[in-house]
Image (cartoon, rainbow, N blue to C red; front, side):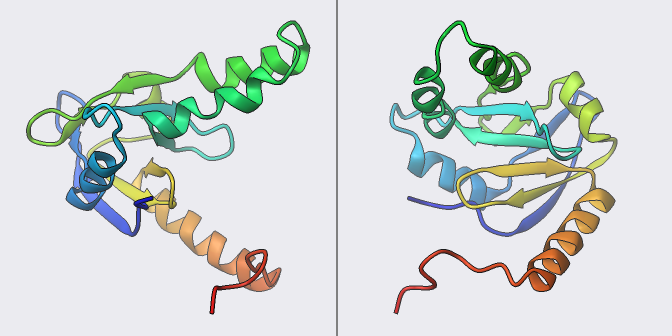
Length: 154
């Protein structure tokens, strides 16, 4: 699987469009099973940013969700949190996407945006908030000595 790596900054135009960074477009294209690099945008429920999910990765969330009782409070809350504010988008020929206004407001986006790769997904941030988040994550990882289960392969 191709991963989203790195941090990239682009301009947000007056129509709410922004170019997805070329490495991210390549990763989306490599992951698209139907030839169309659709992205699902949703507000993060943890951070003031937009989460961007390749459609196939996002739709894989349905499996675990479907194992919950359809009429349970847990199912209803998780389904609402995941799906109710989600927006499917496709990059245009120039690789631009339109950021829906409610999501741009959630992330506090104005002129510039930062794309932050997180492996299977990426996030879209206001630039100074992205820098704070990266610094916070590095510090917390160091302070708590976070490691990956099983360590790095030899």
